[in-house]
Length: 254
Image (cartoon, rainbow, N blue to C red; front, side):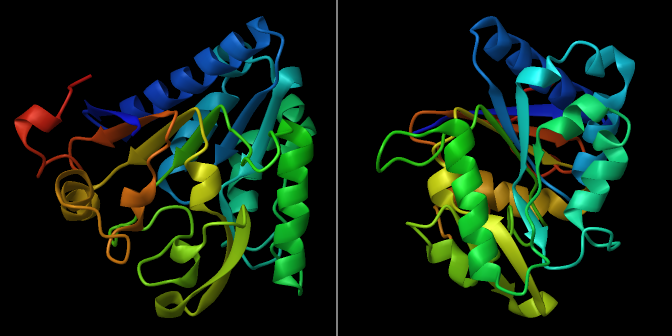
């Protein structure tokens, strides 16, 4: 079972600064060991502040980008310049400002008509970059995840088929309530990570966060509960609004 930590911050800005510091620290540690630093980034509104901080000189100059490989956690099946594209958000927030980060960025080409082929290609890219042992999933050094008010994470939504995936590393997922196709990393990859950081902000996430943290595991209702790396650590970086329904004992103020 993974080791879990909950850290509460006054606001999104301080939460994001802590996330950026975690990223920089682990990147430096990996470079010091002579190995690449592999990280997976989520889309959405909450990670945007974190990515913009990474692009600032106070962080970007600390990070050994030449040893850093960035992947996507998930992507909507839209062109890369679409307003809803996670890649577009990541590019505008980080990659455009830090060319060295863009050099080793691995884009999930979810606009391909053959979504299964796109997933297979991305899985092959994961394997060739991180070179996992036979029959094992690639082991990210760090995965950043968000969580929606419905308890979804990555593009693993309640009741969707990808929640049951246990063999493929990347798979298509149709989200009925959104009427949208997406591609996503699956539990086998998420749960092989050395470290996972959830970044959760906003009062609309409070009830889902309480359920995910405090209630028995039910992946059909709260897919975020399924992220439990067997040999890794999970940290929840949450702002005060999202943490308002947690018991005092569950919070660790930062």
